Image 1 (tube, rainbow, N blue to C red):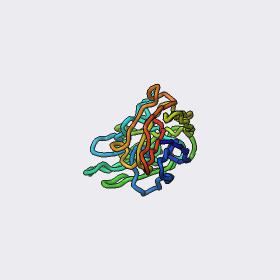
Image 2 (image 1 turned 45 degrees about the vertical axis):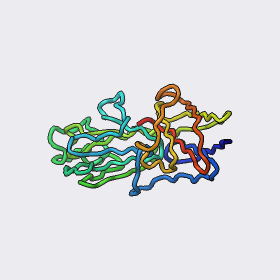
Image 3 (image 1 turned 90 degrees about the vertical axis):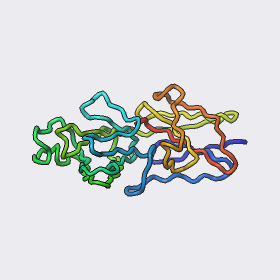
Image 4 (image 1 turned 180 degrees about the vertical axis):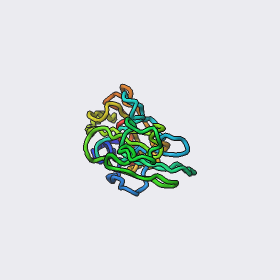
Length: 235
């Protein structure tokens, strides 16, 4: 079967759509309050342990004082949510623990424990908060206000966009890209939404490992089917 390809501009990672015999639908950006799923949106959970439970693949950066970071592209989204069955209350609050007082944060007026930046959200049982990072590239540290003295912290690292191109030679697709964090993951799915992609879509490494910038694939869409690809920062 002859395979055609089309690049689709998405606010969440570089995306490629390979249609079979049917025209593909362009995947839409998730909006705040809409159910989101990995890999398109990193989901951090809070629970009974005094830590932000990081998404699979989130890494500690050279500045370990910030805690684990999720790497996303400019205009991507991140969600924080209370883990199922959690009774403890937390916050996700812009700030760092560098000057955190020795008493509990809620008993002080330190600007570390009130928001020092653009967000401060309460995460009680069953709550979630989804935020788009559109301010620009850079690192956005955050803490839990009630537990910042216990080093409950994390960070979101926002990179420039991943620029994706594709070529198809004799039925073999080659993706190549530039930009982003320098560590990548390729996702392949039959679903434009990549819903449930952590278990249903295939997570694939670039040809040279997670810091590679090419990926080759011979998979072919069946009649009436479409293959969707995402090239994302590895978070």
